[in-house]
Image (cartoon, rainbow, N blue to C red; front, side):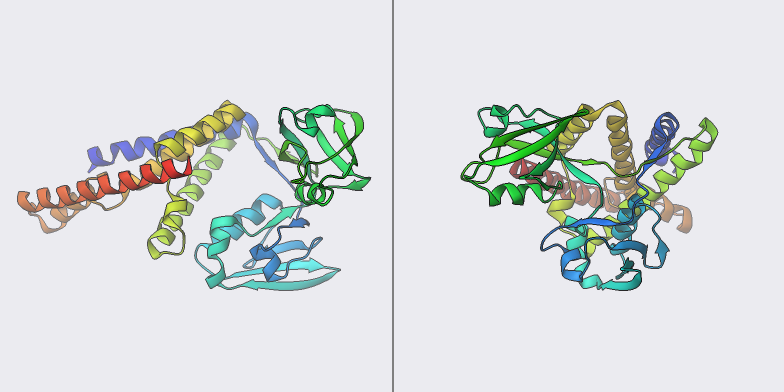
Amino acid sequence: MIVICAGVIMNVLLAIVIFWGIIFYQGRTIRPVTEIGYIAAESPAAKAGFQVSDEVLSVNGKPTPYWEEIENLIYTEALSSDLTITVRRNTQQHIIRIPRSATMEILEDRLGIYPKGLVPVVSAVETGKPAEKIGLQPRDVLLSVNDVPVTYHSLPEVVRHYAGTEVLLKWKRGEEQKEARVTPTAEGRIGVTLGALYTGPVQNMRYSIFEAFPQGIRDVWEMSWLNLKSIFQIFTGRVSFSKSVAGPIMIAQMATRSAEVGIVSFLGFMALLSMNLAIINLLPFPALDGGHFVFLLYEAIFRREIPNKVKIALQQAGFVLLLVFMAFVLYNDIIKF
């Protein structure tokens, strides 16, 4: 049993060490904001009755002092129960309930609420498009269209509204504010890829090397519990299987994106991947370490060996199913590529 679990143990230890190092190196950055700045149209939040400027106070009775906790609780609670979210609206408290039958949409596409303070920032500029002609550059922060302030979520809709019509666009580059007149295309685009930049309050938390260790263990535990709940939801059919699994192509893409962000992001992705491998290997499925462990556990309890023919038959069946699963995952990657 020790030998069978050795690989899983090393996967877990690797994840703990990586998270320990990341937390010690950069600490934690949280956004101490609970006010909703934008609600996506047709999202579960819009259907449930959330309003811009609502302050989220709690999720299923658990306090939400900052935005990261709001997102974490909404997702984790939606995996196994109804959602009861308490908000403050115009000095009065309101309770918004989302039944479990409606939480599948949240698990796949999130709730649809975003914090106050998100501004649109240019990630890339398309060659030959209006944005390039007026001199927009990556990392420019877009401020307004015709002197109307825009947010990350409202900007595309505003630009589409002025399709084919010249508008005054203002943006900020570093500390310098710029402006120019630009005419969106007939499709309502100016030729930029947008990202979201949070400009609200930020709180940085630093940890000593000894304080970071239990935080790393806590992160690994929370990640493992969330993964187990997600796997359970896949088997019960509440979460789309094809949207929840990734194969070598998707993993390579995600690894590349995380590496482009920086070494810390890449290491975090490696820790996540390591924990996923540990959990999958522990599943009581023939041909995986968890299947071997179940065989050994049976022999330990009943004090007799499982017949070799039975072992071989189960292993072969498990191996065939594993090959089918791998083929599906690879096909799923290809059609998404």
